[in-house]
Image 1 (tube, rainbow, N blue to C red):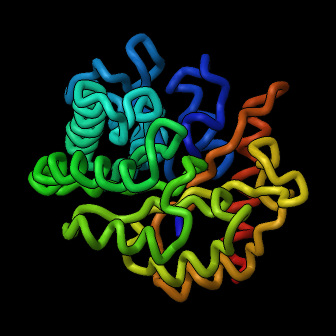
Image 2 (cartoon, one colour; image 1 turned 30 degrees about the vertical axis):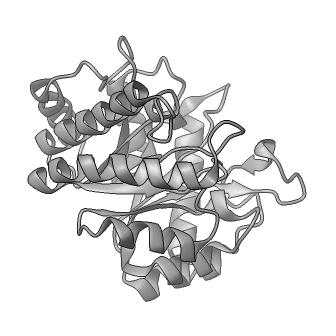
Image 3 (cartoon, one colour; image 1 turned 180 degrees about the horizontal axis):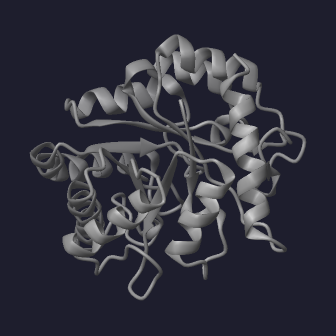
Length: 274
């Protein structure tokens, strides 16, 4: 497995050169970049394939690979929206992710499929998001870029059996799970999710969670919470997963380099735990 870190682990004003420099110095193998809003640092919704290729070259100059792209934009334009125009905007975000990923030889983009709310029922979220993803899948298949459905705190896909079913119903080799280990700890066991999702898993995010807190403030840095990392590592190895284990954590306020150094060491311990 590879040690990975997401761009969000650094303060938002951190330049890409600094992201790559700090990550390399800390001992990471790969960096996950984000498709940001217009005017953001690095890749944005306005970036061209040529921009993306230049960023890939920069990462390679630091000895780093980029194997996945994330984005927060789908929270603003969810595929589950009751508004058709909003859903269309969500599809465009995913298509931009795929376009940039293809230009950078990246094989996976992270997708939050939607969110259940007082205004969007569970079954509506399920149906609408699948319908929209089916419209995007031909683009993913054409460019051979995988759509990784992430399990997040969106009151949706709350069990590994349901997530497996949701993915299988999309019936494409280019859709799978972007599995976030810390996100399931409040209502499940990540090692069980890994074994049930199995080969559907395309990429893995890591964070830790304090179950005694039990709400969104319960997320903590690696090894500081209640994830059974030994069992998680064992399950990933049983699966034969050899891709990035990518940290997605809140930046340190005092020194952004310190988080990278600490986290690289923590991921190494996690990989070797099982």
